[in-house]
Length: 328
Image (cartoon, rainbow, N blue to C red; front, top):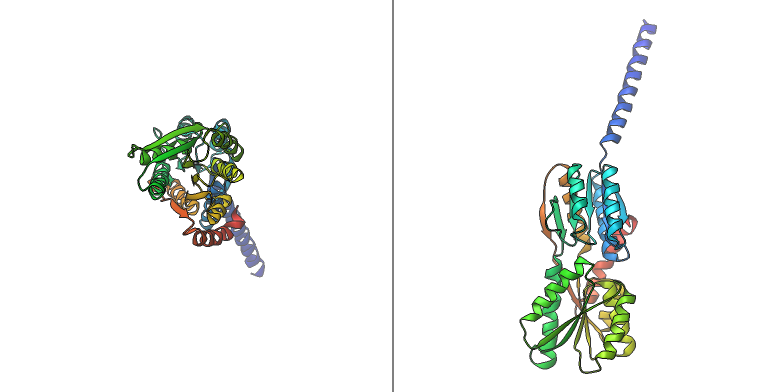
């Protein structure tokens, strides 16, 4: 009787072990994975969007793999193709160029892989969600603040403004459009667009060096740089030349921009994107997309940061960065 019982137990244990192994294999096969494609990890904005996405993914048992397009349109298309070939369950992508990414999104749709678009919104292509600050709205906020500064300076909204541009980067195009739109209602404001050779601090500084020579003291009121790198380059140029007659206004929230706001002599305002909320909303949209649900558009408002509120902003921002350090 003992022998029979032993045989039954052995068979039951073996069957249980097989069942456990089967469950493990099934769990591994059903584990979800998401590809996060950053437009440019040279900027903290994209780094912390990715960190927040990874955090939310981990909290929901989803693997997040992170990739960097490094402002390269071709590289971003290649990363999209690789993510499709590797059969990710969803792709979260910030476009370097919105139009250039449309064929890649079609390729993903054909493969049954949902795409979440964050930062610059892509038009003319089917995505499961679009999440961002609304670049044009942020530009408009910056433009309205510029108008307030001109009114404070002259008693009315008038003056000369230069907008630094980089047509290859869609985010800057949209931000510049909003900025210019906000100032165009004032006929006594002259707006000129000047194009940087590179969308970097070096590119911004080189162009601004030339602009300061061409616009001696008293002839230029505001320079607007709608990208952190370009804005920081303009700041380096203006501060080096001691041109406190020119107010610098920008977008983004890199450390150099925020520190310059504390100084207050050259850099007067920046519209900061809430990268943490964008990352959270993008990952939540990806989780819904994996279940076949579309989220639509999610607009996360930008935050106007000036000398008046920069200290409070920095305190809150550092606390969030500390929380996300392990996910970078």
